[in-house]
Image (cartoon, rainbow, N blue to C red):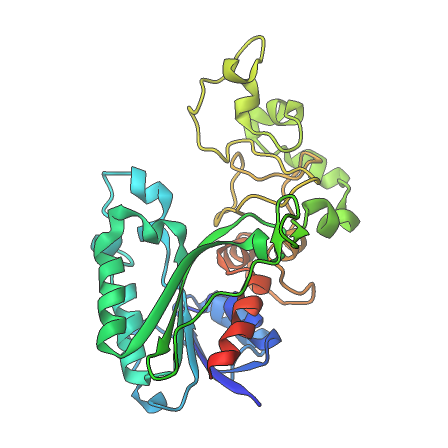
Length: 337
């Protein structure tokens, strides 16, 4: 049996890919970014792909005809960075994307699916953003949904990345209340789980550096410092706190990702949404990560096509929900439809 899905804020289709692998069929997908929409079309991610501002889309034609609505409204208004940047307004007051969460629930009201999945960064659950969280709960109650929400570490479901996402599942009250699937992995493999999947396991066939990559010098003016950092460390290696004899940086004086280097012995840290010369993670071979590697870390298929220039591809796949995480949640959702 094919279960129908409608996808909002689809990006390049991480959630959609995970749902597809779990046996769902996406009938409609939308995003405002044309390059991401081109990627969706290239991969036949949905029967219909509409590149449009969600505020201009009428969803009433899908009323009572879709099993599941999925989507992750833009996350910058709820990011940890925005949490600390007090000069920029976050949440509903964000100038660029404050409208997105209310629009998500307008779509839910017009479609009236059996289940919805709402995804965002873990910062969405911070006390700073009480208004959006209260709005989510209020809307779900008014429309007759039981909700279950949790901050999930993707590595605990088999992704080679310790990426935390806030996931909320709403299910019509007459159907039941969602329970998240049991975690399949843990750092040390405790409680009948497998050990975390490491970077070395999924990137072993890319463990090299080309002559062209040697010329790129990640870290820019700090390239030589990057070379000296052991795998699994960042700029803090050069601080007195870490025992460096001639400290170069003060403790916690930069972003955590500054000169951050992967190690083959553990999962990746969260891949940043924008390509950067000095913000990692970088490969342990002292080079930038390749798009094919980021796809592996996000559990996309190797043959998944990404449109646009390299920086566009980076932004698309790094902003996505890891496909493996999405697949595990979708398998459980099947039990409620």
